[in-house]
Image 1 (cartoon, rainbow over the protein chains, first blue to last red):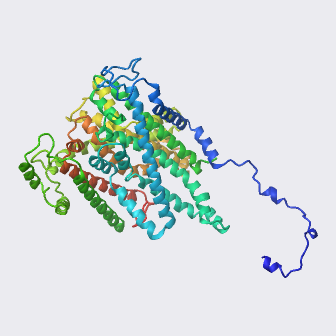
Image 2 (image 1 turned 60 degrees about the vertical axis):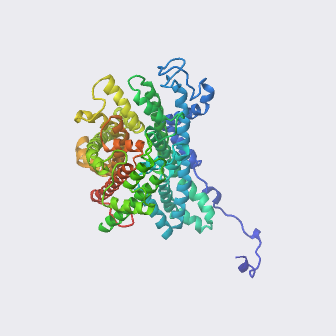
Image 3 (image 1 turned 90 degrees about the vertical axis):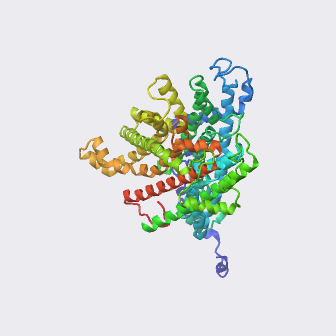
Length: 311
Length: 310
């Protein structure tokens, strides 16, 4: 442009006057714009079930963190009172080895939350990397990567986890490895789907035409738009990991004693059903309430993020 | 269509091969020998036992033998209980698991569809809230927890149902319920949301304005379309019912395959673990395939083509 102007005679600016047209005004929105995430937050807060779930999670997390300072007993301490029903001294009673169930239940929350969160984070890392590489690369790379994912989905999840845990010695780390070994496939699929659909949208094309580079498009368009789906998948991975953990602990493949796991406690409690039902009932309530809370928050997030429900 | 099915068979084949290989090598890595449990044998006897089960061969021979016998659907003899073949165990116990599973599936689909439809018909009214709450609670209570609670309250306290065993229909009610409730919740939620979607569509409004009753529209028109997502859920439902029965069968002392599987895990009975795993995998993979093909038949909008999956 400047090159072609060089040959032209110079025209000074004061020969022009602005006659009208308020370009600055027409560009503005009539209403104050609400950012996407603010809107999501507002919609989430209108969902009663999700809010209840959210507060339950906060309570469970706080109790899990602060239980050593709240109770005079430790989770492995044998207090000499066996199978005592709930009382002022032992709110949830004691088990057959005389351990305080109130304390053990919250230590179980530590393990369940830790395993759930770790499994979700590992799924997130592998799944997002795998899915976005497949989606962005496309073509043959995408084909091969997704066929691998297809075969892995065909392998029954629980069977693999059980087989792995039979071989690895029971413990926290083997449990997390077993849970995430095929768990990431779901996340990878969702991320790939998002990336594929976003990268062919008009606004990405528009951004490209306007000269945006790939980094800009990834940071400003792909990540924020896929974040919702990723977040929902993560929130819903946690309860299924917690469920699987307690399922496996129930089978005796979970974290070893004297560590407290909800599944192990429920399994022990089930054997003492007629004499000490509280040994089953309290861990049962905790597992169910926590899974419920994560599911409620996940559903609420999904509804809040759904652009079809935008008003 | 044929191409699609063939392609799916190839996947199933690869997946099965992977499972067989993985289980084989994992079992070799597994700590402890099945013969070294309570009493230690003299070395000569242990050597003889190893020879009998082919454990003294190098790994590639064992692997080859295992692949061949598995391809012939021969899962070998139990290492724990002499003279009992895994095939016999499966043949004896799987029908029981299947009965229980089918019962649980009927319960889950039947009640789930009923609850979901009712909730959608009375959207945002009392019934809807009650049903939705039941569904969400059902999803959140794991089957093995529910099994214990049912045993305690309905079996022990109220004496309504037998606590354990397998001796006729009445014995199957509690375990089937324990397995079914989670899935019932899922199905109720699915049906509710897809029914709500249908209720907003033109054809339902049309049918209503023609003067058809709410229930008439439900049975004649909307339910058919609303059931599609349920068909998609059938495969995970089947897998869930089968795996859910592992613990539930143990809790209720039902001599099904799930109980044998769990026992073989505790006993480290490797041939049985491997055999049942492979058997379960075959069943699950075939079930998923059948449901996918079924789905293509039911929903005319879906064309099964190689490569593109619905």
